[in-house]
Amino acid sequence: MEAMILPYSAGTTLRPLFEDTPVESEQALRALSEIHATDERAILHRNIEELVQTGEDIARVIIISDLQATSLDQVANRAALPIATVIDVGEEIRSNSALIEVRSEPPVHLRGRPTRLRIVAQHWGESEEPQRAPVAVDLPEGEIGASIELVDGQESFTSVQFTPVIAGPLMVPLSLPRDRMPADDRRCFATLVRDRLRVGIVGDRDSARFVRAALSPYPPGDARSIVELISIDTPGDLPTRRLDAIVVTSPGAVDDALAEALATAGERGTGILMYAAEPPGEAITEALGMSGGIRFGASRSPEEGASIAVMETARPPLAAFAEPGAGDLTAVRFREMPDLQVDARGPVAVLARFDDGTPVMMESAMGTGRTLLFATSPDDSFSDLVRRPEFVPLTHRLVTYIAAGTEPAVIPAPPGERVVVELPPHYEVERVIGPDGEQIPYEVADNCLTFIPRRRGGYRITTAEEDVAMLAVNLDPDEADPTRLTHEEARHRFAASATEIVAWDDVREFIVGLGPGERDISTLFAFIALLVLAVEAVQSLQPDGSTKKDE
Image 1 (cartoon, one colour):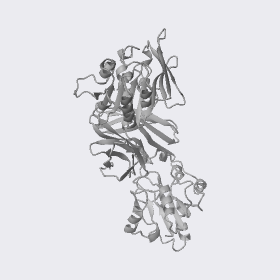
Image 2 (cartoon, one colour):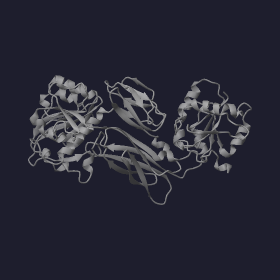
Image 3 (cartoon, one colour):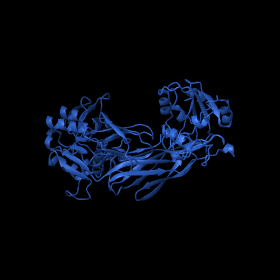
Image 4 (cartoon, helix red, strand yellow):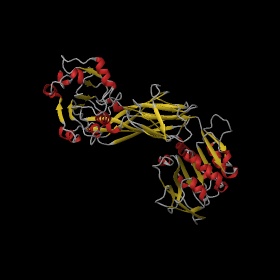
């Protein structure tokens, strides 16, 4: 093989470079099937690495590019190439807007409960004043809209709220008005909507009565309930079917055997919330993943009482209380408070503190499960919290937050890149299902699922019994930056190769100057005209495959 072009997108059309050098379609399709590309982006660095690893005698690698900086940055400092030629077919894009992130609050989604999506957009380019752009959110029950202010060089935020009406996989497409790089004007959010949470309660009826009433005020079996409560008194009471969360209201009732069972549940992803008015035993703090990170002393009674003065409202459990009208936890009066210290170098993060700086709410992890320690009583013996309207939403938010640990930990990736999903030990994956219902090849090793998505959209991970995870695959936000490299900067990216940059106007002269074998483009390479603009946004190409310079 004397020369090779690395195309940058599938979903493209092949066309001849010159009228007298047609490309045979069968050859062209075979060439496309051998490259790494998705329907919207290329994986140039993987193409180049695998090309070098073949060991074939390749005289020249030709890359068609619009010199978008973030795309070629992936190629920088890779293995040395044969003589590389980069054909610059692009033109500068002076402005671009993109959806770069969509995330939700709360992290666990329940049927009939409000969900809020936080939408982040960014604008690059020059404009005299900020612009407002509509954001379309496509829900199963219909489209809802929002607007977002696009400010040059900055991230902008907006949010929408909706209530899922059906349990099961949910994929929500979002979009901005199309611009000259339309691929990044779309993004999707994906999740599993659940009927209810399964919550275990460790503690006697008296200590747990307020928590039980807050989580499930309806009679057992009532369709309005979003929480199923299960009493746990011994290790044998832990069901074989997985719990989403466990609330401990009586730490003193937990012996070493039950503490060990709780630790095992936490390792497998079950969240644990513990109310601790008195110092818990070492086995309990170890089950919370807080061993060595906290030091409990006896409780004390401040003369004028105590209040919560510092809250990490940037963290999901307490984020809602930063909004006006959401309730005021600082108004809660504590008659008793423990003498508690947290080692700043330990595994414990403080979420809230009393007005004298003493920690009152802490977070840690046990295996794949989240754990919370609330250093107060679950009843009215230490404070008036359970008598205040904030207690019910706070309890739900804490339990929902720790329940999110039951979902597999997902590291998202753009189309064509490897996705890694950490699975709890008891998950036996049966299928990975793509956006169009197709089954995606996958591998499972060391409790990790890996697969390569071919396109953006929602991907379902299923066991024999049910869907266990839903994740969204989107373009990398960095790929929305339209900044181009100069020819000198592009040469620097390929410092390990003897690189030449050829402007589109000079392509004919470049081809003529190649050796006789390399000029046989009908058998050696084909030029690709991009139809879906994405990473390599070839703005000089028209939808019909012609170029502006040909007009």
